[in-house]
Image: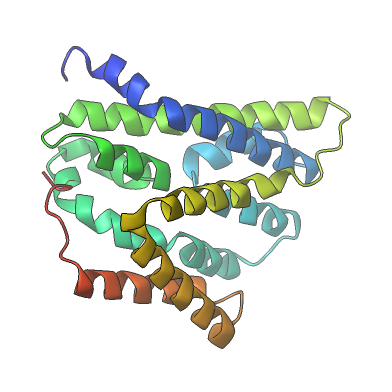
Length: 226
């Protein structure tokens, strides 16, 4: 690893830190309100690390949802990773024993940070960014579970923070003219799939159709795998 990888990874992941600590805290509080303590928050964030999926999991855990239903829901919620993760398959394979963790830890926000880096960055820098982002989420989750258990406060509605994050990201993309065609395409297909398939089954087909059309209408850049 390069000697300055640690400092650069901290600087690159700092925006994720602020988002993950807050959202992780929201998840921890939500989990605590459902009757699960800090150890559950630690385990979920360390081994699931699914962001929005973890919020969806809370009522499933509380309601003893069948495992098959949990698996199918997890696939539907996280299916988007299949589309943007493809661009990093070759790069992660070249990272050897780090490959399994890099695949596991590639979240939306970590992917965004990777895409903002210049080509040819070291494997050590990518690994540290992924690891630090993961640790931020774990820390926020445990903190939220502790607060939710110890403080007699009303945290109703805090689980909406993940939805709010996606709304902010969507608005930010909409301000960029270059992103507007893709945003409009995704919105149109999502609304169509929502109408045809309903709120429980539209996400994965909408993502697949949007990704396919974007690939067909715009060549994939080769920098991500470099």
